[in-house]
Amino acid sequence: MEKTNIFLVGPMGAGKSTIGKRLAKVLNKSFHDSDHYIESRTGVDIPTIFDIEGEDGFRNRETDAINELTKTSNIILATGGGAILRDENRQNLISRGIVIYLRTSVLQQLARTRHDRNRPLLATDDPEKRLRDLMKVRSPLYEEVADIIVDTDNRHSNQVVKDIQKKIKDYLGNSI
Image 1 (cartoon, rainbow, N blue to C red):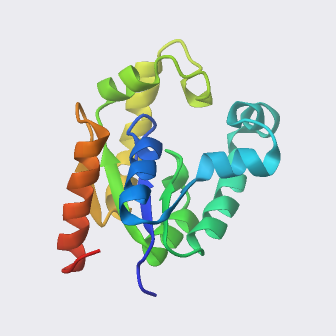
Image 2 (cartoon, one colour):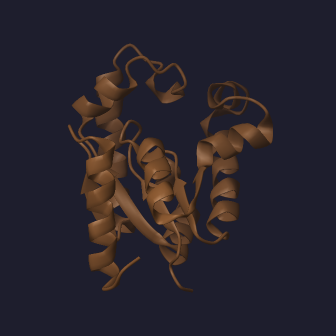
């Protein structure tokens, strides 16, 4: 399969949605966000799904969403931070597009998510510890699936998009 899709992976607060929207515009692709897709299909927000179905129920919905979305063509997909936890998701991402890991530090994540109440995994007394614990598990998985790694710390989204465009051209060996 020709890799016309671009899938963004990385932790919460890495900028996947913001960068994905800008990247879709410059590459003339449609943008999708797996969390928004799940919310539109269920009619409720992610914290409500976590409350009712738990994390496992949410992950089941996420797996279905990623399977459906990655089958479409010419898209930019921003995945949820934990999407890479399931082998099925990792395989679908790897086989159906170019995977870009938007890497960011825990301190940057804290700064970007501190006022966001839509992050059930950060509903804890020590969000920094939670983010560090999540990164220990998830970072190797992000690296495993990534065709390209781009750092987002202290960078404007326009800079990151230009960097991604260059790295995709290098990766493909031609223009995009």
